[in-house]
Image: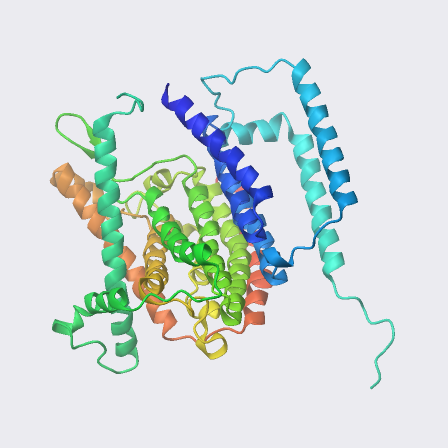
Length: 172
Length: 355
């Protein structure tokens, strides 16, 4: 086995087992930590594909910012294993059926498609210089449109977060 | 067994370098605790540590010994694994940043082989630093939450929101520098600041004074140092996130803080003050052998770092602490717009003046 394959299998096993840990652990804080570990494994895969920029941005944005906010909320809500509400039978049953249906769809889609092996010699498209050039020449329109989307999301968040203006003047 | 097909000599060289850097930063962090007390003493007209050794030079050893022999207490109602993971993560992230800092120029030996004084020259060096810095907050957050103490929790939440807020301004202030250098690799940024005077000042500090100021303020906030040491302000939160910690786990938290101080000073020097470059370095390079020249460069770099650390300490013992809403207002309403302005001006200058 080459170095590449060893790393690939190590990262794959890590990603899958940590992803299982996210849904199987009872403590929500542990779930968040498992999710962070999953992001690290996926970043490792990006590095293997020579997409260093994507790998580090994945860590900065997801592990460094979004997961911190998740952790924030979970810590403030003080969720513990013993306070987790018990779902009733009907909800559990519905969950199993819908999950199973999704699994079936994915399985059917994967069965007919031909899975290509990953190229052993990755391209240089993931390096920051090439990525930037591609984004700002070939894909400039989708790129700008998505940034407008982000801007609108930001403005929306500010509008929701703003305090409601007092409609009635309070008593002096 | 040839599983990993990597050159053995390469691995040995890197392991040696990593060991030297880790031991060096631990040793320097140890003496930073001493230096901090001495600086505080001088500024407050006291003597400071004087009992252990000459000038109290053995004080860090005495402190370390004390921390090692203290009783290890894990609170009854704490989350045990996370309680232990907290300080470990703080230490890990503090030490990881030093991997991409170039400590000196490459040494070319007589037989043509090149020894690099940088652990990893990756093309995304600065982003790596950002990634590690943004992970640094987990140590504080997990430790504070796992202690099951209200003060610790409040402090860790403060630390997290402060770190996230100031990371934004920090990144934006660096974008201007990156636009000028056109590279994310720290080695390349240092090499572009070669020497000191090349018809114009080569160091980024002279090209980006506003960016430097913003970066410096954000560095203070990221390091949780006064005047932004809200997460551990003792008048409101007793001791902060490490209230429940004792023995060497507490030591790890305190120590990680000083390692962070050392490494971020190194990053500041690398980005804005030319790293290991110094005036008339070409003449010195011609006169001395490559190894001696590299050693001189490393020494110059360390001297610059120590000056930067002393500046951090002077500020700590001079300015009073901010209030929390003031901290947030400064971060979001002053520094981020200022950094954006700096970015736009730099972009315009590059586009129209220095084509």
